[in-house]
Each structure stands twice: as C-alpha cells, then as structure tokens.
Image (cartoon, rainbow, N blue to C red):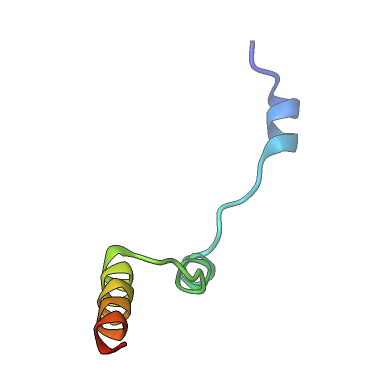
Length: 49
C-alpha cells in the first residue's frame, strides 16, 4: 500500500512558469546550429592558413 506520509515527505513543488522559464533559458545548451557554425568557422580558418 502507499504510505502517504512518506510520499508527502518526498514531495517537491514544481517551479512556477517564470522560474521554469528562467531555468531553461539560462542553461547554455549547444544545439546543432551552434555546432554547424563552429565547424564552418573552423573549416574557414583552416582554408586561410
């Protein structure tokens, strides 16, 4: 059976929308577009040298 007292001790409230938005936007995540731009810049740099 479920022990509700134990489950309540584990409970963590979810972030408010603004807090969640800030947490998401403040993460520095590299996506495919960033990787492609970096690869193109490196390739151009190698072509110049």
